[in-house]
Image 1 (tube, helix red, strand yellow):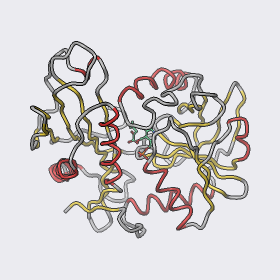
Image 2 (cartoon, rainbow, N blue to C red; image 1 turned 45 degrees about the horizontal axis):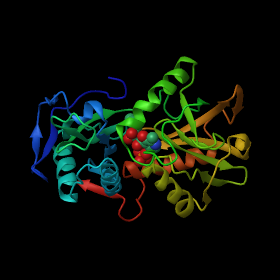
Image 3 (cartoon, rainbow, N blue to C red; image 1 turned 135 degrees about the vertical axis):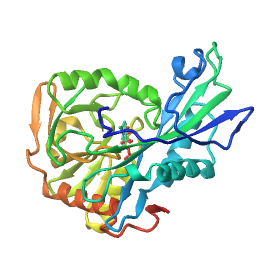
Length: 328
Ligand code: PLP
Ligand code: COI
């Protein structure tokens, strides 16, 4: 089961037929029976989102910035010429799935959460390369713990010569093809004993792009939080939140700019961030056989960012306005 700690009973499904999204409903059927010539199997009309529900100390259930997942899902849908979702349908699906599976949301204090996976696929008989006429939008969820083994521990990463996305490709959206392209380099890194892979910018291979399924950030020696600006990375909601926390809650300077791999020593701490990765400290980066070690320990700035972010997730720290949506 990998990252998931278990499965849940209910998921939401809605179909797009005859030019519009149907109402959709909960189902306990985890299988999807569709035509063998469906676009999802051949031409990659498939995309997803990832967000989490957290239980607070008082037992409230809360989502972290789900509006941003809604916006990004529609950006992905547009990029793959798939029909956009209304805000109403997106939130109906999420709310119903979380409520129907509420007994499976991990209790406060275990460092766990409920990972929610909205996705959309193209279906129907379609042999030529063109967009489908029919689609499925579905949301399922699983209780999860940590994504990278080891919890808040500094991990070792390695750069790859492969790209997950091209400069003007689909890197900025959360489409399945990006992940297909990432499996081989990831496997190579794991086989070589690393926790995961660092992608460089596809045009010049000189700048850090992303860390597998997470964004990269570094802390300079004068305590500026820097994160790459690139057209081929997924705009991470966690990254955006960390930038805000650093600037407005921890009083740090922040910069979005190029991060040259050959100038990696400008950072005293580095991390990977994402919904699944939360904040994972990077212990070292190996590039062309040279290992640059940041620290085997979790650095003090990353620890502060982590504690603030996770405090907000679980309701222990007051969230900036509009970040939390409670599910009642
Ligand atoms: N980059 C990639 C490729 C991802 O798959 C993810 C996960 O969603 C992220 C970055 C982090 O994005 P977010 O913080 O929105 O989860
Ligand atoms: C996420 O953080 O939501 C991701 O997409 C990572 C993942 C592919 C499990």
